[in-house]
Length: 185
Image 1: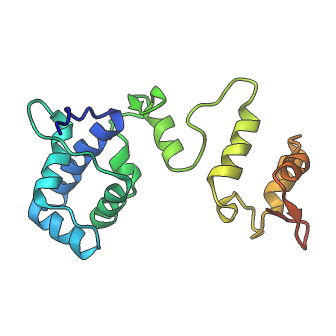
Image 2 (image 1 turned 120 degrees about the horizontal axis):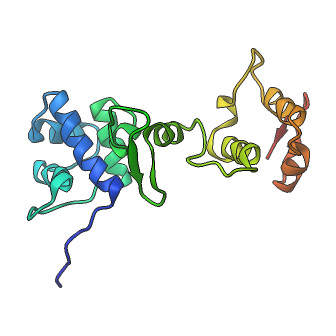
């Protein structure tokens, strides 16, 4: 069985370049990084790591994709967020970066999205709804913004004040009222 050349997308190329950059910054050889990953429970040979790094400039070199478990283990061992591997490191927040599935966006938008702060893009006239849905679907309630009160009721109260139909939305999601006025699904 023959396999074709692996074509990496923008995120695969970012992982390759960032792995190479972070490994060098930590002063780790391919072998040392491989050993650290093994101790963390994710075996990747030095050759596999080299092939992942080759994705940064794959001209004539063998390339290996990093799967999500590889990326998370690498982030743990390199002591960075997975976003530090997934997104290009740029000099300015206005620099353009490619995000797989989204195309070109500013570096600031990509990093804010990857850090769970906001959607990658906002649609005019739908910003409020998209921000709320991002918060509700993409961030655990215990990370929702709070103003001194450690429960979800502050967020739902703010959404009601802003005119978002949070009660109808929660009912549509099958959420039920919890003691103290909070809702839970």
